[in-house]
Length: 195
Image 1: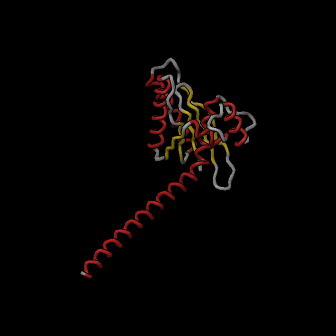
Image 2: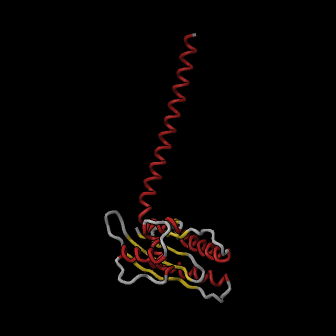
């Protein structure tokens, strides 16, 4: 599976592509940031980010785009910019019929380091180790994008199996309920015949 991880940001949007699969190693196909000038108006900044992310999508043709889920912060202005970038990234992927997945920062940290409270330095160190990178990806937004991609790559198979198991359990429960209803109908019909 090939995954494009995106750490959304209005000034620096981290992007990273990883590829791996069942019983295969994981490799980094590209990492970087898409930037927008801080002194431009918001619509122009969003266009710059959208065009940059679309270039990454078109060049690497991922099967999934994994985006960091926006979480509440004290700085509402920062959250708004991040949410807007998340939206344009999801739109760019959806227009190309590419699956989009959102992951919380704590779930990414837990997948990469084993702790949902890991700091950026720990996440960067683990990403570098897992991908066999001799120098850590910089800036931190780029490392976070690779962490998002790895998180999805590792968790998607389990999430898929859980969804299948839940669907199968729902089917079994539904079939069981129908058998109980039939048994109740048959039993009331039998009682009526004995009267």
